[in-house]
Length: 232
Image 1 (cartoon, rainbow, N blue to C red):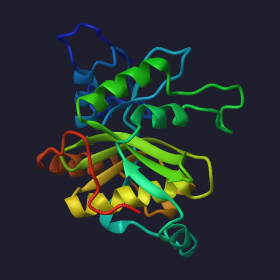
Image 2 (cartoon, one colour):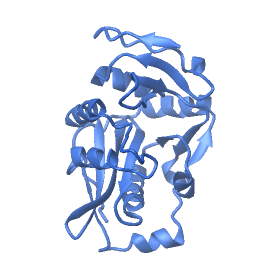
Image 3 (cartoon, rainbow, N blue to C red):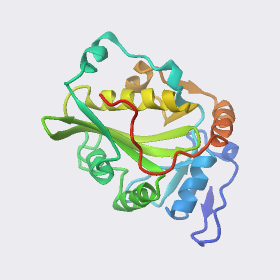
């Protein structure tokens, strides 16, 4: 396994086809904005826990949601009706990340892969206009949301949380509809889950993902604080 340097001038990543069968590519390095952005451009993302060094991944196959293939079930359409949720964007990025890092059924002992180091790194990306959050509100309370990174015509979805049924799904649908309007080519979902597959995500070979990513990255940047054309 390749160990990355933490030297500020060294942004090297090995070729993604050298990743393990599980998708693990490299270890170490740092979470400076320059390195994170370089990783995303290469189809790589960090994922690790508090008791591990920084681990970098590029799984094959890759879960992707093409905005024009969004699927909305009949039950979800009911949750999308006006007035049930208020959807905002980039209103409270750090709060969304902290909620995503909160207690989850898959982490019964309170662990999370969104470490304090990750929280600080992505908050800085948000301040630089690359990372964005979508929030779902009900009666003035933050009840769901998601965050991720945008480069060119690609949105790299990182995590989402739910405090009431369908809140995060409504936030995601609102985001994908806006990405359609803006002409985004893809939403990277990293790894498949029943939740994502139900919304229209699909698993594609890593090589195909990288081809789509290359095409997306030549599109104009939409950097800075986002505002949706239409909000739920």
